[in-house]
Length: 267
Image (cartoon, rainbow, N blue to C red; front, side, top):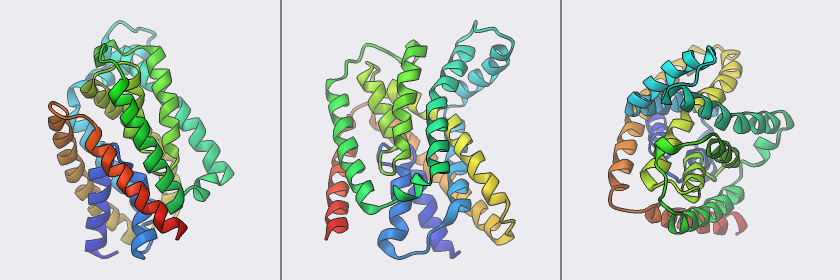
């Protein structure tokens, strides 16, 4: 694949993965609207790996605590925040894994990859994010995360399997509605992305490994590096902006793009 195509793909994934504007929706739109060849699952996995490494690096302190907590959790000990958060992350990931497998086995995931679907989800879930952000209280911080809230956020996260919904957007929406402040909702959303990306990446990697094409492996490595750099920059920018602005700019972008996509889809 041409280097320019790889760069565009990686930048789209890196910038949109953690912003509440749907990375999967943008990746699907790239071939749909430009006529470029579909990047395929191998490159989808690669750019997701790049963004995964970015979020792990950015939240290294939290990730280190959760990693240590997994060992304690395995021994039946939930006596640290890391161990408790590890349990919360496992619970929050279960719904998206189960729904994802159901969509994959039924073939419905392919039917959802259309411009019209992305237009509707981009628009509607953008408005839901605005509603939650404007009406949700700010009484909780990330340290107050509970098993109940992890379960609720996990159920909301399963909706992100519909292209255009945005995994980060829907989990931030859930977090704000549950009463978490903007930065805490975004922080929990980013941590929830780690096991989710790992699970989806593992599933797709099984299929990709069967292709055993070295040219794809080379392209995947290049795309992963670019996606990592773009995602790290996007994370830093978003959390800096959250100190002074709401999620409204992202909502405006979603609404405008959603309307444009619906016009294209139905005309």
